[in-house]
Length: 151
Length: 177
Image (cartoon, rainbow over all chains, first blue to last red; front, side, top):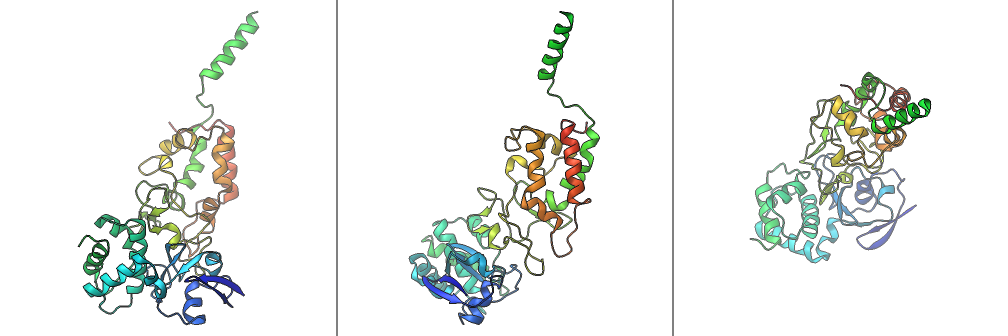
C-alpha cells in the first residue's frame, strides 16, 4: 500500500513501487483523463505535474511520485492559470481528435506558471515533447498566447 | 652548501614547473572511454546528444539555466532514477548535462584532457585523486556501463577504466601533445 497525494487528496493505492504512475491513475483509480500514448516518454500524452513540473506518468514509477503533489488534467481548472488555459483551448477550439490534448494542456499550464508571458521559443522548448498527430500546433501556440493575455 | 643550493633549485623548479611528468599516451585509454557516446553525449553545450551517432536530443531538449533542461521540460520529466523496465528510457539519479565549463563538444582528446585537469573548468578539482573521483563513483558515470536497451558500452570495463585513470593521475595527469 502506497499513499499518494493526487489533486490535493491523499489516496492509498495497491500498486507495487515500480508500477508506472499512469497505470495507477488509469487502471486502479479509473482517472482516464491522462492518456496512454507511446508508453516510452516520447509523446507527452500522459503528462501530469509532480510538484508543478510536467512528468511523463508512463515512465514515472509510483515510488518517484510518493511524497510529491500529483496534479492531473481532472484538477487543472482548480488553478487560475489552468482555468485560463482551459478557456483559451475552448475558445480557439484547439483539439481535433483530442487524444494528446490533456497532455498539451498540462504542459501549457506548467509553462504559463513558470513563464507567464512566453515567447515562441519558450513555447517550443516547453512543448516539443508533446506530440500532436493531427498537427494542431498552430492552434496550441495561439491558445497559449491567448491564455497569457497576448492575443 | 652546494648540495643545499641544488636542493633548493630543485624544489623551486618543482613549484614553478607545474608541468606534468609522464607520457601523454597515458590519457589514451581514458580518452577512449570519456569520448565514447555514453559520456560525451552529455558533455555538450546547448543540448544533450543521443545515440551512438551523437545526434541532437529529440523533442528540442535544451540545457536550460542549470543543465537540467528548460523551465518546464526538465530531464527528470522522462529520465528516472534508473532505466525504465525495457531500458528504452535511460535513467540514473539526477540526470542532467555536465556543467558548461566541462563541455567537450568540439574538443579533441588533448582538449578534453586539458579541461579535466584545469581547476577553473573542472569544478575546482586540484589533485589527480579529486579529478578522477567523479569517474570512479558518480552514478551518472556508472550508468554508462549499464545503459540499457543494448546501447553500446564504453570500450573497457569500469574496473579497467579506474586502473587507467589511476595510472594517469599518478603520472601527474599528462596530456597528449
